[in-house]
Image 1 (spheres, rainbow, N blue to C red):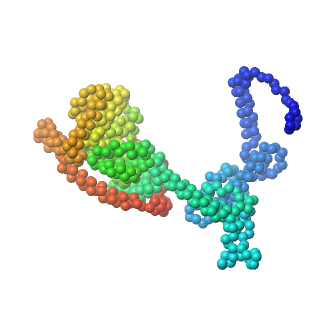
Image 2 (image 1 turned 180 degrees about the vertical axis):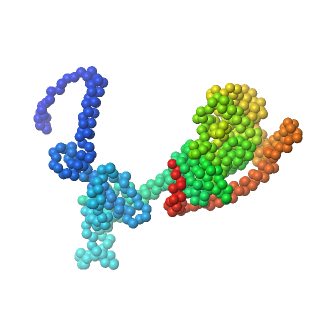
Image 3 (image 1 turned 30 degrees about the vertical axis):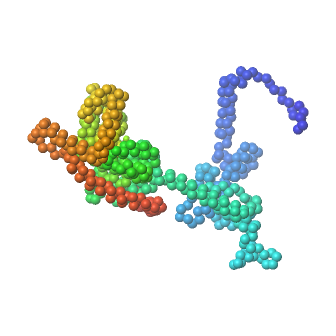
Length: 570
Ligand code: ADP
Ligand code: MG
């Protein structure tokens, strides 16, 4: 066949059938054949062999091997220059930046000889690039030469070269390209634009880095939280902090061995709950705080995540304390420090008690567990005036033949606008779990709800739920109509309730003196004390909030290494 580019030999094209081309079997055979060949090549040419061949510098005619050897040589040279650049970049700075990630040769294949031919960083400093043509020496007034040959330091060519060489000193992320071999000159205007861009990029990447560092995310704690834990170990509150027990959407839990605080021993084994800072969920969870007179919605409005997460710690602490007071098995609060809550550990030897969902219980134990949960819900409502709000087999632990209630940061007061809706949801979760597990006599959720609340809402399922919501709404409307603040309402509620309880108890056993009762005066006295304490704690907290991030980093760096070892955070 002839063509303007010359003659080409025509290879006769063998006709083949479409069936052959489409044949899966043929494709499979071809694939196998190819794999076999590539395996063969792989076997023949291991990297060690290439290195051996390269070091022996024996002559070879194998193109593939030659190409590999050249590539190896090229990669090594690249790494070597990188090392020198790294040294030059870091100089004598205390903080150094590693270029390790940019290396090409796998560390396993870096041979020792590399160390021998390390280049002195000064050498590269003195290495002249092509655009580094000798620049004239200027006197004090910035002038060089005499007569016709006079040049000033503002000479456009000299400035241009100087600018071009200076961009090579920009950060490693700045792709300045390779100016070697070109007499590159940059005008002051171009240089300044590039410099501004480089600075802006640097700042941006720093901001990204900070964002990553200062958020409490999966298993990685931000320096602020680490410092809090470190301080707790340092002042003896905790003996040591161990591995992570759980990392959920809203918090991370670590195991710790307790120390002592103000001469009081902490529980020997503790669980540390650290509320997360990076979640939108927290914003959504405003619904749980809305209407809880104990916690101001203002904090949510401020939208400062660090302050918002503290509310969860405060809520969980207050709720656990109240539950403990009325005998509900739950973790005992040990210390609350900002968004870090230390509580007693439910479990032994670092192994947390199983959740009801995971506990392998006999039917007898399950029936017992059901009775306990129902009793707990009753106490929670009628004594603590709280609704769990997220009650299920996930937040109930089985330990020492007892059910323990946990995770009450979102629990709400009965005065909460959605309290009854939350309670009915809790009833549904509990009944569903025990029903499925095969427990006999599990009440219908509607009946359990009515039993706990003393209400007489009719209907079933969605219809019942709608009525519960209507009940919540009407109660809220009533509150608004009378312009009763949540605090007053809570007071009325407790007052009425304490009167009612007293009457009931007297009816039951007129002789018995009941010590523990929901006295509204006691409740609000305690509350006002607590509020004051909280307020002063918050004031201290907010001033600490302004701590410089650099100070935190600095403190962490200076932290006693031995004590830091006691914080494993595995
Ligand atoms: P979250 O809000 O992330 O669900 P939880 O308070 O439910 O947080 O805790 C998550 C898990 O950590 C629990 O399911 C439980 O296994 C474990 N846990 C939490 N508190 C304790 C504790 N005091 N003792 C033992 N294990 C705990
Ligand atoms: Mg939970």
